[in-house]
Length: 279
Image 1 (tube, rainbow, N blue to C red):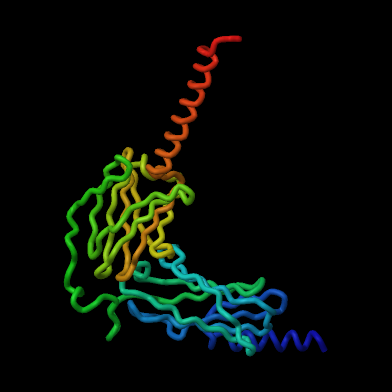
Image 2: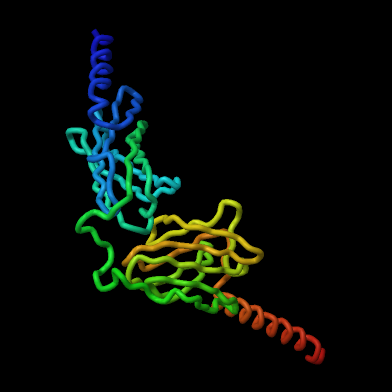
């Protein structure tokens, strides 16, 4: 009797799978299925992810990841599973920024020990009524001429569109460079960084825009790194993470001051031993 029930479950899964539209992998007799509301989306259009499990696990969320055509993870979310086994996530996109690539995107879903994935097409013409920048800036770009900022006696050259840099601060604990910006529309930062300011190993830099990983291009020439980093309207912070970053001047100055005071104390102590007459 038990074998008949298993056979029925397998047959039902095979019948329903083409209609649900996603690959499904089952472990421990559990079926996990994911699909999108549509097979393709235009730039700026939200993506609707729909999922279903047949066995609900206590205190377990569905983990949804989206990977771009370039292989970068651009979305990560934990989603509650309803009592009927369904779950869903509406994902906002943009005309540019981390969603600028046109092509096949992959949705990966994990639930308990099970995983599944489905693909959808994204990009192309802008959908009607979708706009990520204010109308007054739609046809306007700020000056992208080369500019220079001095960071701990090192000159950092950069060109910036649709934004301005408010500050640039090294974070020694995270081995990163934090750049605060104010944006007018979607834009791009092209920056040349001396390796004495920030450097990385063969794994390359990890770049975040407001905490989210973003597509970027990095190239090394001599003692310089050049990075091209896109950002969207409303972005406030770009963080470039490497394996080394120049310490902040205040930290170095404090360390030098401590060493200087220690040296003076040691020298003074030795002088007292020399010049104090013996009794």
